[in-house]
Length: 403
Ligand SMILES: Cc1ncc(COP(=O)(O)O)c(C=O)c1O
Image (cartoon, rainbow, N blue to C red; front, side):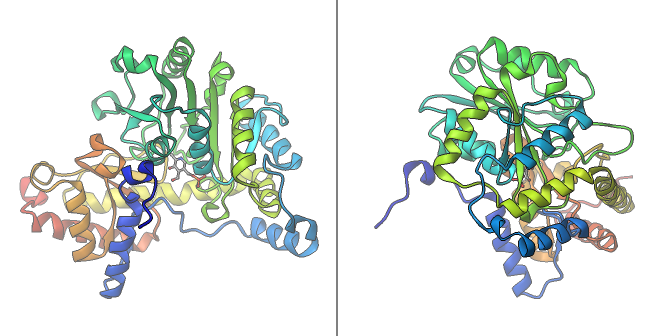
């Protein structure tokens, strides 16, 4: 019998694998599935990007060869130009930028590049599960620090025990946040984070996967707009949500030259990077950034408002998000106390075909919430809300009666 490594054995199946299994069962039962589960954009990639890909693959067979793992110069130069235009921050495209096969890959390999057995990674709770999982796969330890609603889902660095901080190598921060959709408007947060990382010799991994999916007047910053960040930080960016390119597998990381060089070294042993024709398509995306992103943001903002409106009709109040493609919804108290988010999500899916992510899947402190991804067409949110109502009632909660 071939046993997987102890590290792999330590991990339960990935949250979305469990949900996917239930989803397949729901389809098999011929349920009308409304998928609000994974943050997997449903709108197609911009046709000009698609055209660039087809043209490049057809006309430039050299792009069929192994890519340059760190990213071709054209990609890195375009990222550098975009960063100046978008955030006013300069990076050396040779030393401070590398292409990634999606930011998930970069997050995983960064953990593997730096963690030794016994080293801590400071991980938000709740958070994108990959921070936790890849720490375990790296042989490191996870310390979960809470993001609580009463603190606007921001961490309190002072609450992390000194003994843990001393053994910590990495901290992950991610705003606009998955899963809570929280943003940071107070600049002192960034300054405190940089000071905390510097004082304790910790790598600050700022995951900015949702920096462009923001609503109203809010513009998300880069950690590099704050003094001292280049001494301690790297920042991950993704094309998946920004450009609806989740399946293309391309992203990038910018930041501290030494950290970037170690990640580059690690990657040189395990991958060849994102295909050259994908990198060239991503260049097109960055060059047409304003036009493409405007449309995508509008789609999510419209859906977010629609979902909130439909929920209100059944008496379920959910706060609007200022960013991301998610709604982080607190479950009614009776359901939190008696059912829990996982069971609620399971019953909702099995009985009605509505797929959502249980908050507990993002960490124990996510219990009591569910995350809705706004990745289905506008005409589905009305039905989704009615099906929520049905399952709330199934568990003895009639929100309208309460009013
Ligand atoms: C916070 C966060 N970081 C990173 C990623 C991964 O993005 P990519 O598709 O670039 O690997 C996701 C995807 O859901 C995410 O939510």
